[in-house]
Image (cartoon, rainbow, N blue to C red):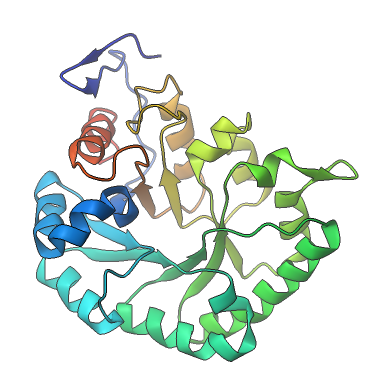
Length: 265
């Protein structure tokens, strides 16, 4: 699909597949965490100026949830969800505080960014724990889900991958944050998994299917097909995550520019 890159922005073919519906463009602050550590308000201001509508946070940069909420609103940015480690979700003694934090932040969804049980039973137990926690978040008007890396698709127990074990055993209330780049790097089709577990992906991660570039489009993936699959589901946010260079705005700017060329921002 991609032939060249000019001025850092990937070029697209003349005929672009029109989006089926509007999905908002957000950015994971992990992408620019070094800049956030240096000047958090200034970084938010720059992201808004680029055209991002919302932000998702994993780290909190020394701020309380209420402080983050105020900063986001002051800069005209919505909270496009958040991430929080598994122990703060699945351990009963931590659950109430985590629900309160997400509520005060104004996050519509919370995603666990990493888990890795070494047995099928471990993943089944995780599915049970997430199902219980999802009820507490749902009561507060917040969706709870899980964010993949590659191992959830690559690793299998008796021929069944970890992703399948989790979602075959979790309640329908346990959402997903399909990381599209990791899914592609694992050799999987995002469209296949979106169709297999529909109505669970309100905020996908838009990440380059590459270990050397953080810019989507420069990775050779067919992003028009991927975006179309998201738009056929329930995705509300395309959340850009660029992992290669956390000390520059260039990668998230070029990702957004590419999305704009495709009519996705």
